[in-house]
Length: 284
Image (cartoon, rainbow, N blue to C red; front, side):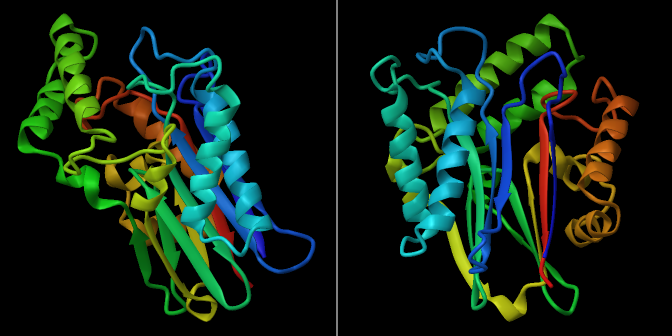
């Protein structure tokens, strides 16, 4: 089968907080892919000595290993174990109860000759192509259901000039509002993988017969900007483009669109440039 992946930071002066990888075990029993998008915290204390890139690489590596080696576990159980492992690796030195402890979105897929399984947590995306060419977007819908008070704050930020004190102040207010909804016990917000393994049970999961899947495309929101921010095509057009041109071409087009609208005037967004990752798996 064909695997194609590209991941790059939004700013080359900063480490990439995404994680992207895939595995095709030599046993020939199938494979797996994992894509994570680390949550960039505001400046200041986050209670952790290691940082987001360390967290996503640890969590992503554990999840990929478990997804391939422990086929007796569901993907949600693999994620639960990977979160526990990662927390154990830094609980002695770091405050994992801090609301800004390192955390990330999660996309995982696993396949064998019979089935293709998926898991999605937060706002990264997984596109699934059927034999007839139709494309299904497997998404976690909870970020699209944020209260109007929070979405109103987001639109206010986007409407203010980039770099202005007013925008900075509005962004701080928006960040605080989103943080209050992230992994909140009330169940009205949304969830990321952080230090609590219970978040794994809240992921969107499912499966399809292997015969009904011809390709998968996993995307962090920085790569999904091609469709969701810049409107260069719908989900099906995005997958077809990547099938034909590759993941590197996808990120190249996203970067060109970002450069053509540096202040977000035509295409409002939280960051001018974002870390971006894509993994394509095409089945024979």
